[in-house]
Image 1 (cartoon, rainbow, N blue to C red):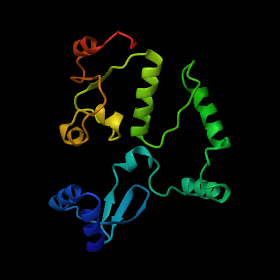
Image 2: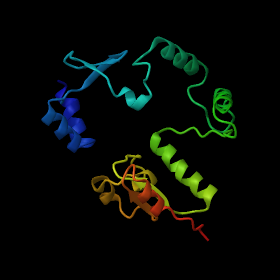
Image 3: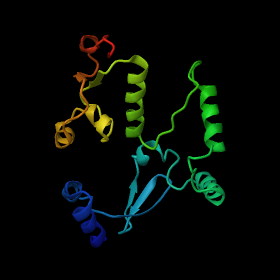
Length: 187
């Protein structure tokens, strides 16, 4: 095990997670990955069931993905966001083609939490209503808005006060959902 990297992680990033990893016997440091597998610095192979939350659904270092990334890096590493990006515009058009009629606009986010933040803003702008209903047991991220919709005291308490107007209902409880809905538009 690379004790230096693990110790640095524990000291400077997340001591709680380091303790949990040590407790579960997973106090390892990753070395490399290929396809569905990840190896630690001791050479032990693990099957990666997380897949970076779905972004690696073709596995680690899939040859076609690596080649596409290399082509883009040779052309331009990342859009400057000041000018229009042709690949981004073409992807948005393709998404509009395959989604239900009337869904023409696309928002590209960098993470699920950023998508939740955008959804909060879009819903408030469209409905004119300030309230948000979320369910117990859900996880939406740790940015301020997303955290407000993630009813877990261990995440929320250190960051209070959160967004106002959030109501929490049990998952799958239609009556509780209906009771929580507020039809009053904001003024």
